[in-house]
Image 1 (tube, helix red, strand yellow):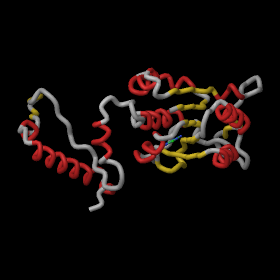
Image 2 (image 1 turned 90 degrees about the vertical axis):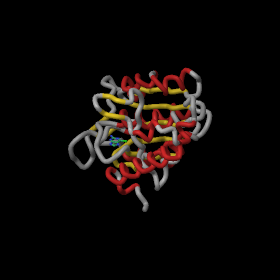
Image 3 (image 1 turned 135 degrees about the vertical axis):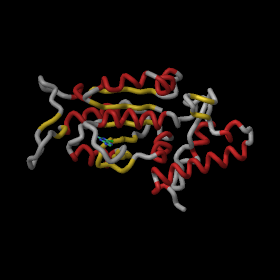
Image 4 (image 1 turned 180 degrees about the horizontal axis):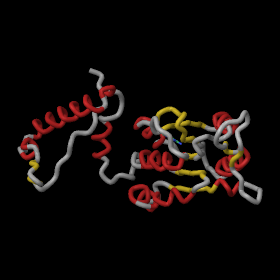
Amino acid sequence: MKIDIISIFPDYFAPLSLSLVGKAIAKGIIDVDVHDLRTWTHDRHHTTDDTPYGGGAGMVMKPEPWGEALDHVEATADGPLTVIIPTPAGRPFTQATAYELAAKSQLVFACGRYEGIDQRVIDHCHDRYETLELSLGDYVLNGGEVATLAMVEAIVRLVPGVIGNPRSLLEESHSDGQDALLEYPNYTKPPLWRGRSVPEILLSGNHAAIAAWRREQATARTRARRPELLTD
Ligand code: 6GU
């Protein structure tokens, strides 16, 4: 999988060379290119934003650098592009979205500031590429960079070969879709820590009883924290 990221803050993406995503890059399973949007400005100050038509607070990203950046990525691509525009005004990014995107050959993340990119760029993307405007949740970040880091990690771990033991993915896959439950609590050694014991059942060796206990715990936790996830 190829991932292109276009941003005025390319330094935000240094952590991609660490941990799981970094290993996937080292293994050659994914290839990440971070592009500085200012590469495609032509004035002395490398201007990427301007005041909004119609007035109002904040600035809007100018269309011209975005057009050239996208043309460049398209011209150097060897297949179809899927463009992702992180925005608090987008559809929710979910685990189902992550699975869908993990199957694409080339993703392009267009990181704008939260006041947004000139709408004509977004319309151009919808006309020319498969394009998704996606939000992480109902809160506002200053720009798409941190949202992109989160989405890239969620997607890349689902690409075949990235996670050594795909059983951990299998267990999770029960937890997507409508009747998802939150994860049950986990314990490791020692059996007693600061007066707190590991629940007896987990030491019993009774795998059926353990599975039932975990399901109860997950259900109780889901009812308390995310009742909207329970269908029954
Ligand atoms: Cl995807 N972008 C921005 N700027 N803010 C957000 C977001 C995305 N998701 C939640 N808040």
